[in-house]
Length: 408
Image (cartoon, rainbow, N blue to C red; front, side, top):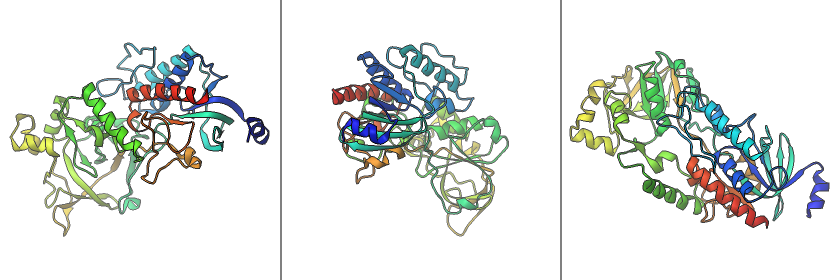
């Protein structure tokens, strides 16, 4: 099918040589590279974005989240953020920053334009349906991230739990949890950050996950970052689905986290067995609600050596109310709220018609980390090793250069 045939068949579909889906860090980085290479926004390429305004996923973050110690973003190409106000909500700061970048380059992002589906008309032509109209393109750079696909794992009895449930995506303010018994589920940085925040409003938090805490006392330096990136790249180039962030990075075991481990806040209590209407059944704290099992190798070593940094851990950890069962170490404890810090999955449903997934469960990419192996002209950024803002920035550049070469 020729471009003329496609235009006749699909009527009002607008054509761009290169189309970017998503105006977050990765998508804007790709757009910036295209612009610097002489391509004209709105003529040679375009960006469609599902949000009502600039900011990507950041525009949806809770108001108390700031660009402070634990959260930051990497500069967009040739457009430094410089000295952001660390007291203002990150959602405002980043939305303004991304918006300024869009204006600076005259990107004219098409929004809201959530992509419903991408289909292939022929080897070098793709057709996209969006809420803002239809498009055709020769090269597609997908930068949709993960925010629209929150993950909540299933446990037996969850459907019977009558309390409140939140997810990182729906979290609003720590005040919503005042004086409640909160079950925090997850093994990543979001879970530990929530636990430390909740300490302000309640003394009754219970930390559980599907695996032991992966505390990492090593240096989180550039060399470490390159090794992590290479490990993730190896996974996705083999066609495996990207693993969770914490499984590749671990949790930073520093003086800040040690303080909260020692005061009983960041103490892992076990593994979920099931839920009742008002309780959770945990494998770990039984037979008396006071048992503290493995905290992962790094903290276990500190406990074993009676390190002063964790001497008060047992004394400060809450004895959970409730009762045991006929299974050793199992404990039934009441909870009011579940906070799911269980992460996200990549938002790729709109690409399903293209059949990109491999038999190993992921989308296989080439050695450049961005080029889809199963279809020509498809480039993924913010996927695999490029899920961080610095990784997304580099991947955006690579995808843009690859897309230009593909369309030449």
